Image 1 (cartoon, rainbow, N blue to C red):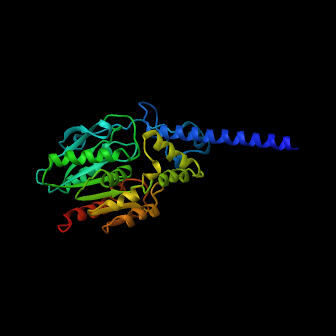
Image 2 (cartoon, rainbow, N blue to C red):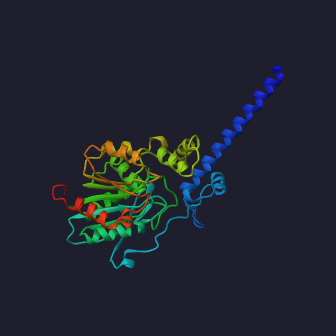
Image 3 (cartoon, helix red, strand yellow):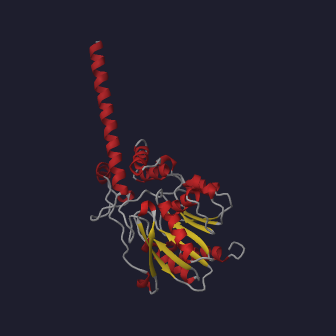
Length: 324
């Protein structure tokens, strides 16, 4: 009987170890696929749009994310622009578009979200330019006209933000600089402020995630799959692949270092950054930020979804003479 129990325990132990190894292998592959852009291939659909069978396949094979490229330029929208290049994270060259505005008092530097490029911010930049502001649009490393093929989901992108801020300050000395970002771009801005010594005159943040772990869990919830333990393993291996502690990548903590005016926005139906997630960031901002929660809105462009309301909110915030 003892032999049988020992044999059964041994088999169970081996199966447990094999299962744990398989989970880690899946997590490692998932992270690699999500952070290393492909030069060819069709992008995997959002988790909410995948069938049950497709979700299982993606769990084992990982997603396909083509390298983000710019499909249009400011000239496509009738605006003259300049191209600038400078060094960012890990010495990789970054590309930025400048939309000059001679009479502008404020300069706004825009940063895109995950798996996109700076052309995704063109509509926003045009709206801001029409309000009378100079705009810069920056490609993070791994996207658009910048060098590289990877993303660290906001960690190294914080260094890109810092490099962009210093470059723009050198070109537009004497004018106030506002940093604006969406999703990953907003998280990278908060990291740059907290850990790169960046001191902007103001921040406009659209749907920054509160922590890498929580936003990873949200992806599994969107797929209606249990988040534990895969979400934790993804964050662990993601950090290992890029040389940082993924569990310490928390924009909610970075927010405590902000010492300038902030306009914070989110959607009430955002599956990636829930109202509870954004509330953690809002609470941690030392200065009472101006906050707006868009109704019936997900993880999407607020300008496209609510054009008049967005223009009114952002325009009045930027034009406040007491603030700037």
